[in-house]
Image (cartoon, rainbow, N blue to C red; front, side, top):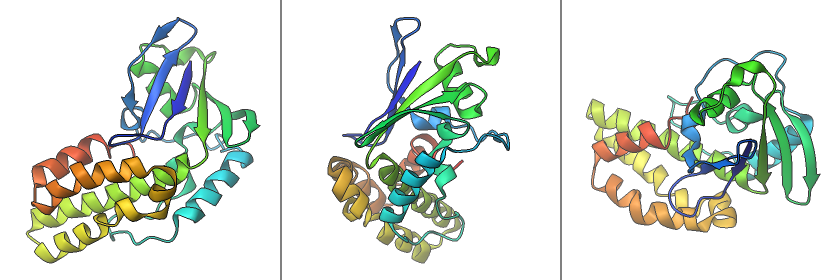
Length: 217
């Protein structure tokens, strides 16, 4: 089974599922559907190669402000499939690794594809490209502020809503977005921010429940 993380050209990062062992192809699924928040075993460590790459890209993303209700992003938040993984190859800007079905995120992904992850004999192959982790960090940051936008709106705190919106307006100009996925920034500027400026709390909640559910686990 092969999973490839892609720089999204439209609205959010997706995972393309291909079950090579069955010769069947599945449609793109949001990463949110594969990240359940199930606790990881203590021995499921992230390989040092991936941790170093993630740290570099998280550093590149920068020290951004977060709302008080959401913890700043950690490496573990950005590499759910890398816990217990084995590096298969690392060439240029790509790293290929296998994620065991003992990883709960991998098991969830397999179940969503109609596979049984309980036999311990199947790995998922993951391909990550340069910039993917930095973009994922930016998306999680955006989701944190959408969460604050919704919370403040429900509380009738107009000042906090405006503060959240001020931060969200920065998303298209974040260095990680401008450098690695400007199309994503343009998509959000055209389709997401206008709805938030209009005070569309229903849309914000819809976005939070869908595109953000796997990023704020």
